[in-house]
Image (cartoon, rainbow, N blue to C red; front, side):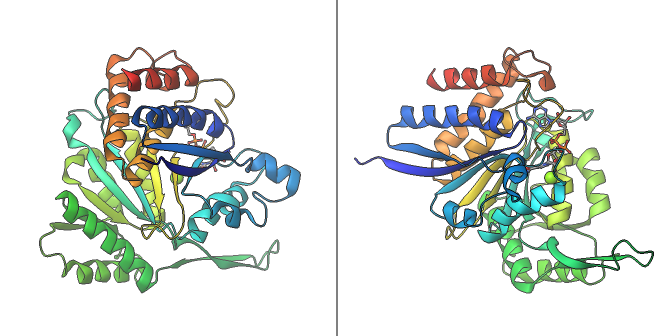
Length: 356
Ligand code: NAI
Ligand code: MG
């Protein structure tokens, strides 16, 4: 049988980005070795803030074209002191998400075995949700204006963009997922205050819902929804929300399910017309960069999402099992999880457990 080769573009980015990806790559290579039917071909791109300081842009002009030839993108983190965050984020991460129409940001919030949880009285099974965050428009559309800049009359306008096309497709994706996984679907919005965008969102959620009478639905305002994530997380299954709300709530989700060092996210182009992108959701953590302290488990979890996406769900699950095993054992963990191991030691341990 001929081996399937997955061509992966690796953008380590800034700070701890390259450090944590290196461990995810080790794990992916070992997985392929053990399986034998597929292999990875990694190509490294040195894009990010250092590149910006040298070239005046986060990636070359034909960067998107270069990436379009890959099966997937594996991204570390972008942003570093010295380059304004709106430039680094928009010039790389958001540019890739938009250019490749990665309109689904899929972020599991699941309390794995052994993961630290700051909530009292919560059982492990109580935290098991998946965020479907709209990833192509909404509050992050980049539409607006800055008028009379640097004068006393200064005015800024930041518009949200909610198209029928964009809103319908993300809501439909979430309904499909809820149906497939036999879970309830919760829409999170804010129609009482955002009288155009979120009223529209709620209307489309109800409209599309008519095609899914078998799916149990709930609709919450974002403020109440965040309160329930802390007080009663078990009420959530699949959650669908806008770009901004999803960004904020998934950091809260990370906090209740093991911390930033564990949370992963996939940026999907479900039609597979363009490459999808897999990343830990944390940033470049300048406070611990270069010290071997970064937790690579989030990037290993995103590697698991990549394997799922390629149809190797057995291996995707195996990686999650290994993450759980390491957290239960508590022998080889980074300082954020109360351990003393280095980033590299955690990666090595994951590789060792894979072969066991
Ligand atoms: P951050 O996620 O980098 O760090 C927040 C806190 O979590 C820090 O104390 C950090 O040490 C800790 N932390 C994060 N990841 C960790 C890991 N793997 N292991 C152990 N501890 C970890 O968020 P912050 O500080 O707000 O942003 C730093 C930079 O990263 C900024 O330039 C920001 O724009 C960028 N950023 C990039 C993202 C991306 O590329 N997707 C996402 C969020 C922020
Ligand atoms: Mg974020």
